[in-house]
Image (cartoon, rainbow, N blue to C red; front, side, top):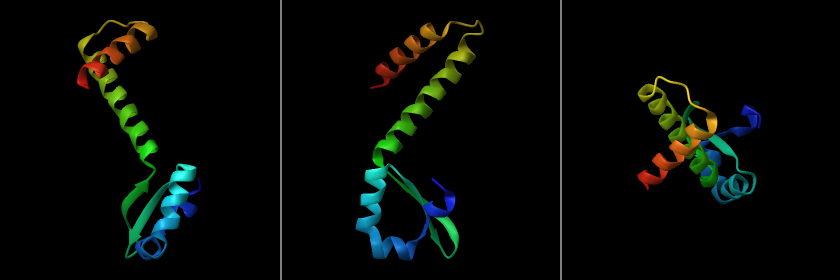
Length: 90
């Protein structure tokens, strides 16, 4: 998505909230909402948000794993360990 198409004013959000939410959900979009010309908040599809949070959690676990284990491991072992750590968090 082009940035120019993803920036909307708070006035636009107020006037078109239902349509904007439908667009966000159907197309898994993310919008930057501005107030007085400044970016203030992000509005995004919940599935996109959840996927981003899961990705961040995996990256954090990978970083922690790399800090604990100075030895390199193969990718299958690394992701297997990460999945176990993620499952233990839930």
